[in-house]
Length: 332
Ligand code: PHE
View 1: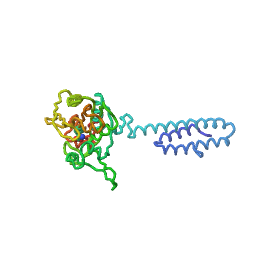
View 2: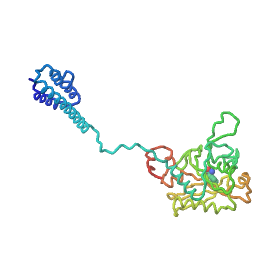
View 3: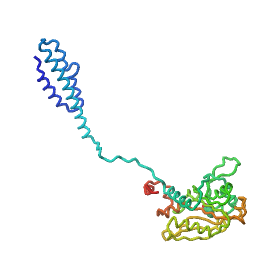
View 4: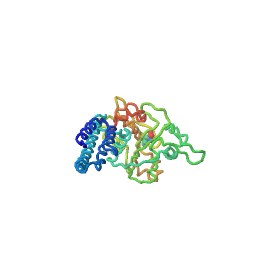
């Protein structure tokens, strides 16, 4: 006599005790495996008396199906409670990957470019490695000229060949010459770019700097156009109340020359050099200096950024300290 009810009760009781995957697997082997207890009942059906076979055979088969279901249900219950107790809190916000942001000098350069574009200027770039001829000679600064001392120069090694000498441009002014070689007036262009100087650094000087060169050539331009343009520009940048001052300065490629300072934290900060393009440079470009005149300027982008953001030491910009750089996150 096979007691299927007793068998089922025993199987369910021991299943209820299985607390992990491994004991579930072991339970399966004992009850439903090839030599499991229910399997051997099914195998033994053919040895039973004929009148018992249908009842035991059908009952054991039904029991097999219901135990398979029970073990599957128990397994998913185990999995669900494991997920509950694991240290995964699916309601926590995700971890944001660190994003870079634009450098304050890039931000300032773009803003300056926008402002000059709005005033009708084109924007072009020139080479960082420049010929001595363009950086100096054709700007009326020949070898031995004392004005060369104004720009302590980083030379590019010449490998002993006798070709023209190259350097890291000390200013963006060589693009005045390059632009005049290719274009004719009216000219209204700015040239943003990096410049390099072999000099000691301090709070307002850095050996690598960004300049924005400006060049305007047309008929009948005067110093009034220079002043009007640059003052309009400064007011657009810093607001109508900004105090400015022009003072005489000397650059061999302009006549007369000046510098523009703005009032900053009670002091004057020079943000650019400027002047009327020297008539010899106009003549060298194949233009009649009696007809054509113009002005040029070279602006220090780091200086403008110092004003804009209230940075007191120019050297912060290239120290790559993320605590400094993070302060510009999200700015435009
Ligand atoms: N190139 C000059 C400098 O680097 C600035 C300048 C540009 C002055 C154009 C006059 C005209 O100091």
